[in-house]
Each structure stands twice: as C-alpha cells, then as structure tokens.
Length: 392
Image 1: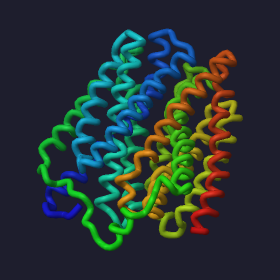
Image 2 (image 1 turned 180 degrees about the vertical axis):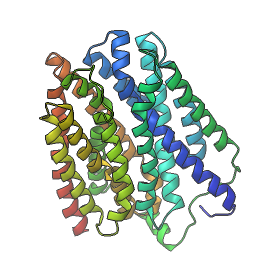
Image 3 (image 1 turned 120 degrees about the horizontal axis):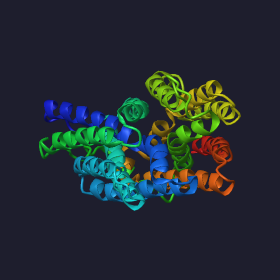
Image 4 (image 1 turned 60 degrees about the vertical axis):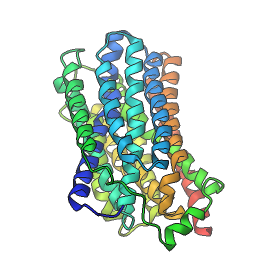
C-alpha cells in the first residue's frame, strides 16, 4: 500500500486502531451481558450457549464476506460495513425476546467477522517489514476495548437494562464508519509487486499440511480466548457469592493482563522467534488455568485469570505473523481458512462448555476444564509445528 497521501494514510491508521478498540468491546460484550440476559430471559447455561453459536455463526459468514472483499481489494469497505452491523447488532440486544437477542448477536458477529480480519490484513499490508510488532500493537487496542467492556457495561447498565452502554457503543461504531466512508476512494491499493511477493503468489498454501496445522492451532486458541471472555464472568459468579463486590473482578484482570501482554510482546519478539514466543505463552496459560480451575476464592481466581490473560495475549498475532512469514506477505490475501477455523473454534468451544455445564446440572467448573484440555492440545500441536517448520 504505497503512501501516496500521507495525511489520508495517517487518518486511516487512526480509524483502524479506533475500530479495533471499539471492536474489542463489541466482541467480548457477550460475556458481560450474558448474566444479565440469562436473568432477564430466565435461561439455563445450555440456552445461554446459543448466544455464542449465533454470534460466531454471524462471524463465520462475515469472514467469508471478508474473503470476497479482499479479492476485490476492498478491505476498507468491509471494515466500514462491519462497524455498521456491530452497531445494529448491539442495539437489538435490548429486546425482551430470546429470538431477537439471538438475531442481535448474529448481526454483531457478522460485523466482527467482517471487521477484524479486514483490519488485521490491512495492517499487515501497511507494515510488511514489521508485521509481528504492528499486529501486536493493533491487537493491543482490541485488548484495551476488551478490558473496558466489563466496567463499561456494569457501571452504565441499570439493573437488567443495558440500553445506555449499547447505545454509546453504537454511536462510536457509526462514527468510525462515517470516518472510513469519507477517506479518499483510491487509498487502498494492492501491495506493490516485486521479486519477493511475486514468488509468494506462486507458493501453494492450502495444499501444504503446515498451513492446515496453523489453522488448527488457530481453531483451538481462538476457541480458548473466546470462551475465557465469554464464560469467565459467569464462572466467577458460581465460585463466589454474586453479591460480593470487587474493584478488580477476574474478568477485568484477565483482559488487563491480556493488554499488558500485548504491550510487552514487541519487546519479547526482539529476543524470541515465533516458536519460542508461542511455547512460553502456552506454558504461562497452563499455569494460569491450573490456578483458575482449582480456585475456591475470588483472590486465587483473579491470580489465575491474570496469568492466563498475560499468556494468551500475544498468541493470535504471533500465529498470524508465523503464517505470513512462512508463506509470504501475499498470504494475507489467502488467509480465509485461517480466520474461518478461528471462528469455528470460538463457536465450538464456547458452546461445548455450556453444553457440558448444563448436562451436569449447571456445573460450570466441569465445563471450564475444556479450556485446560485446549491448552494441552495446543502445546502438543506447537511441538509438532516447531519440528515441521525447522525442517522446512
């Protein structure tokens, strides 16, 4: 993306990072309003899990559409439409109908599926020489939005009424859409072709087992990340009396240390390659999950959530950077299966936790053991990928 108009490029970068910040709130909003909607609509864990299915089904469709926009070189319009859909979706959540709330999560998910991959790919193309650090910086903004999601909802809602926080969120999303709409029409251009990326386009990607292994890694990790954001607040209410007030609840600490990790990741990438970075992150998550799953108090739950949040912070961006490093910068235009696997993983993991909990009479702790299994599988998969990438 050649910088023909520096001011427009600067405005685009600001809007993309602002969009990622607000998308962070919209993405994890489901976990913050889940206890509210469950109480308002009188739902069990199995029924509540359907909200995750609705959101991630929408996200899957949005991801498919992002691939179409990418082929047309229209990632900016994809981001614009995605923000509008998220705004509409969160407003629908104020309905008193279970079916309409499902639809609201579906529309919100479609917006997320359009916006997040499109912005990620735009940032990769705008920063071809420092993709890992640029992606971690971008995702730092998503994490800040995720941190603020819990206090944003809790302090602005009135009982089971979430109109004020959803209305504010919708206004922010509509404003970002307007900003993207008024950018110069020719600001988004295909990456300049040179000897390096010409060769990249000739490389097979999805005939290579390594690509599918990276996609499988994304399936499990995004599932873990989504389930932590979606179920941790409800899980906390089952461990501690829901009336206990805490200045730093576990869900807040999880996203706080998630953001701290995102901010620290560019420093670690100076000393660690992608494989070492991923190994250290996964071992950190494993420690956090062991503490979290066996915690009997809010204090230890907060410690486990903090460690798990710090560990998971850099994994998505590092795995994406590994994908483009192995297959070349042009792989950003052929990354749809990677994002689709992530969306499928999010839908599956969040749903299976609710299903297991409901099957065992709302034993959410048992359902959360799915996340421990996910981390162990990721460690095994990372070991295989490290061996395979070194051979290649």
